Image (cartoon, rainbow, N blue to C red; front, top):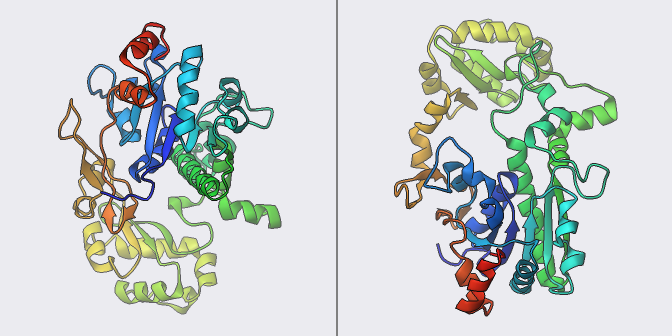
Length: 396
């Protein structure tokens, strides 16, 4: 696609693994030139070596999942020559983003205070575990820890069972998305005012923020939201898993309008009784209503109910990963795209969920580590001899 919204924006990304790269990939997908800094002393982004499935000697499907449309520059920020290259690059950039431990940006000199004399408009994004301004700044941290401490695990799973984490690293992904939003907003402000700044986002803060209305209920009414059977909504009924003849279906007849439609479609005298007529009545008699809906839905298989309810009542089958990936709908809407890679020309990935002008954003595989180093240095004025010297000194 041409004329993407972030075309002409240059972002330096000091990042690795999941949350940071996930967030910056939204920006690269939307046209920003994201220059991924990879330390040559440690083999680049550690996720290049994250298995179990690899693409050549120093690449993996895991790495490609988070790094499409980016450039790779090998650079040792702790070396004197590497720092000089970095500062020259900062002069040309709109933002520097990182997902390092909270105490590291200041040590590496990648904060706004450290870089504003080079480029007053530079925006410095910091994605860390616990932030940079408290006594946990030096703590390492990962998604699952945040789910545990922020109370999310306590709300996930069946009552009476061990707390459970989400099936994937949703805190990482949410934090990456929030970080990209913060960075974009700050860049917009810098373009308007000429003044850059720091933007901080932490895994813990985002995880805690995801408590949303249960947190508001607790803070104001001391109400403790607890796990409910079958992944049910804590306040509205019916909104949970129900048994069919062969599996489960998730129903969400959360309003009187949808409840009336459901009653009409199920054609059952008990469910149509007045004792279930209002939102409050259904909530008060959740367990009884669950039994009655199970009784009716267990008479037919899931596919029967989907054919009857889909498009009329909010509902969905409960798919396995295999079934979700083989669902024809995801290809019909373009959510699977082919991204050619030297080791797998037919590599498939999930597409960016954002559409621009009604079209899916397209992806390009991230190249091998350091692929863009020489070209980027040449743009900065380094000749072949100078580049060779940087390589021999371990700066790139």
